[in-house]
Image (cartoon, rainbow, N blue to C red; front, side, top):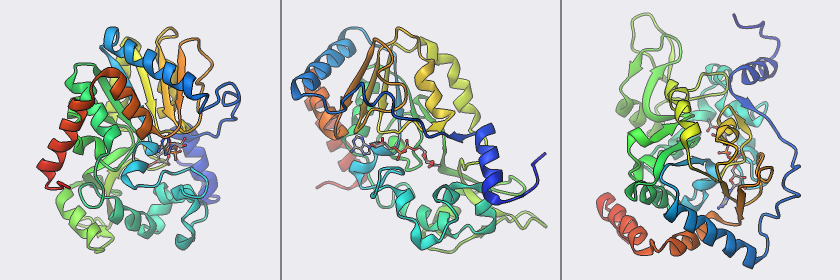
Length: 320
Ligand code: OAD
């Protein structure tokens, strides 16, 4: 049973801790890992990651977050100044994460729908080179799974097949009623949201619930597929973490669940999570597009990556 609604914030905090937790970590490890390092250290890191991928890895688990999509033009959440949570003043929210809080949505769905209008996959944004790189890992038979926290659908658009993709925080691909749970036509919901015809109300008899895309809000359970694939995590032979602050649980926990001897590579602007605490950790700091370009070069995969990019542009009619 839900605890009494003392205040929206208290309740959502409680629920977040029991199900889906945003935990701010101290930066004990960022001192040990200068995220940029020297150029020489960085290129040595890239060379050794490339050689491990080529020679040993065949089951790579990739965890991604909003930093993956900033090169596509979508702001991340927590980067000071540019992150979404620093730019929500116009919505007058009690606290930034309320935009993804199921209890707040029930009271006022407008902030979420305004954001969704911009973010709906296939409307404003397209995959960038980092998404195509993940597709290339799959084409090369190296990919075990991509775990994404992103709701922009860019992994799908880049062609990561459904069976290799865990959209841990849900997606816009389906939509349901927040009261009765009835499934609604995702195309109809998309049209309504994109045209600003919101909130979309449930069509079930007597139900007055609001319909929302199946994005996992704070206070909601993660999709079962997130837990199903957990069984595979110990069989990973390389963990690649890209563009995430690793602040949101249970997602972030996966990074600590791979075997103690499994190499872990972080591609991010700054050191995050427990990276740096294990002997086999590598941090490739700086902008991930640049790192991916260099890694691709070290792998000798440049032409293949360009071909994937070109193919995407041709198929989506976005040829430049
Ligand atoms: P955050 O905004 O917390 O973290 C993004 C990370 O990416 C930060 O560490 C940035 O430094 C890094 N970053 C940004 N741009 C980069 C670039 N070009 N190159 C390299 N690194 C870059 O985003 P998430 O970790 O994804 O929930 O946040 C997790 C969850 O919190 C999200 O799923 C979201 C939010 O509440 C929902 O969408 C429901």
